[in-house]
Length: 449
Image 1 (cartoon, rainbow, N blue to C red):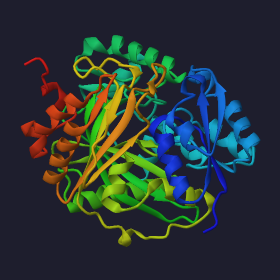
Image 2 (tube, one colour):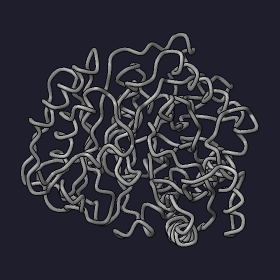
Image 3 (tube, rainbow, N blue to C red):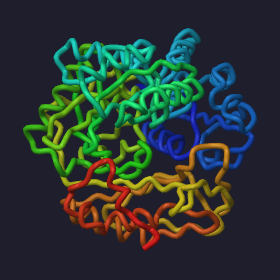
Image 4 (cartoon, one colour):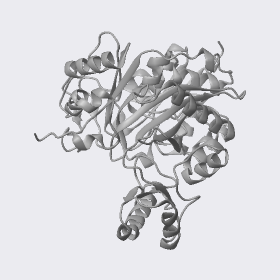
């Protein structure tokens, strides 16, 4: 199969390692870019070539479009994979790649723009008959506009940043007296995080499941969905543990939400990999909330239950190949769980950078580890605290839980603190074992008893 001869990975950490591995299995040469703080990072050691693109501050390195494109030019890279985070959902970067004659391995700039404007995405999909969370039809800019929406949908509500993500620029309002302060706090946070202070309003459901649908779409117009991921275990809207399939969806509802995602992707003329996110209320009513126009951190659990390598498919689609499978070819088997291993205090969730003095990851049946750690490596204080992902697969959910518990108990990481003790508490909690939990679940995990 003819493919790109060389791909530059515009990222770092575990996702850069993951992409390099996929490229190696496709016979593609790789170029790593790195900041001065990441000089000895694993992705630099594994790539065929590596280019330093600036100092530790990501603004001057991993977010520096000029430096990344220059690295691609001097190494003759034909394509760039952005991974997740950093420039992965930056339409300007995608356009700059295209204008430089470099293939951007991801959605089109227009897809990224719409995905980045959550209020606009809601409007478009609502017109297509896809259920969205009740709320404003677009951004709200005054207290008067807020009150008009709130009068219609009632309290509680949540302010969300139109350009947001990762829980930033979000404030829940349960009483009318909280509206003004919550609005300005969310606006200020959104402006600081995204350079865009626009907010929209959604009805706030206190008890929800967070369900996302993975799709793949080629340039020929073929679109498939690869089932769902349940990302309900969260802290401050940040995902911590994901599983596939969801323990609460039945086949009928799974198909229904999957078809919503396909319909949405067709409406947007979507291309490459993407994730359409929904919430499901206590009565199992689904509502669209946002689009992630990139590969997700949690993509391995989908790969485990479908046997489809999402990174390889991204590369093939970007080169121009049609999908080699139809929806009826995709079979879901077994159950997979992912724990995001962060370098942080497991009780206070504060960062824990440092040097890894000793490292042992679990192996054995059904266990996969995606990580950039090695003994002696430095975990930098400059970037996200995610250092590894442990994925456990079982023929059923109970086996996946027991395998994950076994894998976490075998894992030893010395020199830094991690959140492994937190996950060991989650896995034995009765509500988690029964699959009956909502996004407020970790409020019930008490480290101090």
